[in-house]
Image 1: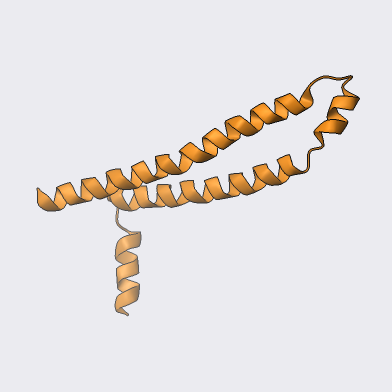
Image 2: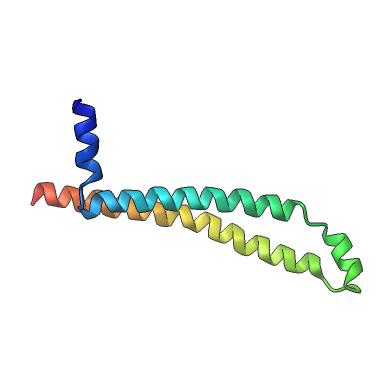
Length: 98
């Protein structure tokens, strides 16, 4: 019974802390799905065939640029999530100390 009551208290809590934790979890799940989808799609691309079909247009260079930009995003996105978590923790500690 007590566990159910605690769950209801957390579920009905309208504080920003509970909502921010949900946002961070959603962000990390979205990043994980994006990484899986992106790398499955990019791994299936045959840039040699694309170059031949587009009369020597450097499609391979375009895909390399896209991969570089995606790699940068996938490195920065978890850092953004960690910063959000740090802000929530600091806000909570400030509220306890203040």
